[in-house]
Structures are given as structure tokens and as C-alpha cells.
Amino acid sequence: QVQLVESGGGLVQAGGSLRLSCAASGLTFSRSTMGWFRQAPGKERDFVARISSSGSSTDYAESVKGRFTISRDNAKKTVYLQMNSLKPEDTAVYYCARRNTVGSYDYWGQGTQVTVSS
Image (cartoon, rainbow, N blue to C red; front, side, top):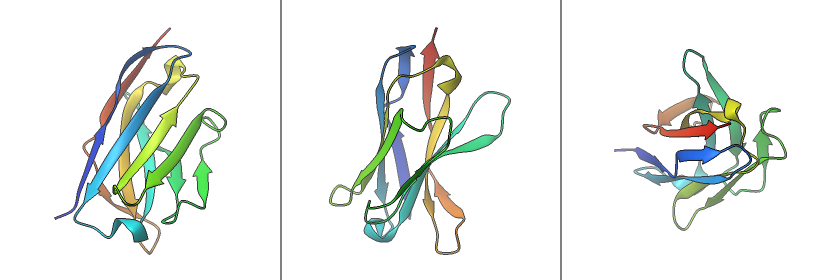
């Protein structure tokens, strides 16, 4: 049974930082591309960042480039999202997900709330 469990969300002031974690179990983590997404109230869920199975390749949404960093520790089966210079518009529920071999995301965590106050 696959489980993805996010943690690290919270309330932070604009300009602050948070680090999200996503612990995986029940899948071959070291062979899985992982992604972070976010969903703000009343909006669609949007892509934030992606990291390849080895960690050698990353991709980011334009809105977070230069501020967010995705990384992973395959020994710990955990993917991270370091978020710096946070803005109120970064307020959302953040989800991690596993990307399957055909390019869609098939397993999702329950999400963690990030709230950035102005």
C-alpha cells in the first residue's frame, strides 16, 4: 500500500521560509520521479516542482523559480521542498505525488497547509 505523508506546513510571514517533507512508503522510491503541487482556495491544483529519481534533474513552475528548491534523500525515501522568500500568493495546500512511467501522477499525499501572511 502506497503512502505519501507530507509535513512541515504552517503559518509564516511574507519573506520567511519553510521546508516541506514528504515521506514515502510502499513504492520503489529510488526509481520514482516525484513532484510537488499546490492548490489555493477556489483554484485548480497547480504544478510546483518535480525531481527525477536520481535527483539529477529538476523542474519548477515559473512562479517559484529562484525561491523554491526541490530535493530528495533516497535512503530516507523522502522528498523535500525548501521554500524561501515566501509571498502571500504562495498560500495553499501543498501535495506531493509520484509520477508514473507514462507521465501522470498516480499517488498523492493528503496535503499540508502553508499560509503566508502579509
